[in-house]
Image: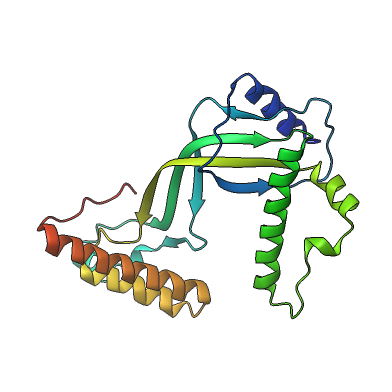
Length: 215
């Protein structure tokens, strides 16, 4: 999050009013980066109220009624919808933007972990490491980063993957995705199939059909 961004500055000013004593352990870490900042108003704090972080599955898609090969020919009572998967994470957030050793150490780990992950995903034979850059340069760049640490209190999954449909319609959705001939289509087809199998297992174990999610 850029401190130089006026909107980011407004967020920081607003959050300062909610500061309370920070917890010391049990945090899941993440970091957000930017380009420039001023440390004149630096202060670290934990937000007093619960925060929500939403993680969306990378693949999601429009569902055409044409794929409902069972219901559409029989009744025509079908409409478009959207298939997706998401996780809602709730917790307490601590903000790191103070010019001190604790913030520097926290940000250093986030930068190293994220760089290592992205270099591995890129498949470089000899990955770049943060230590390849001069320490003074990295320290200067870290001053442009605001760190966010979240102590997770609960997680909730949200899935709409045609699991509310009958076997025929769900099979039509799977075939529709596969017919796209794309990696995205194959992944979504697998997600729909997997969720359908889970629905079947739940029904067998409880004898009750799962409630359909909101469209």
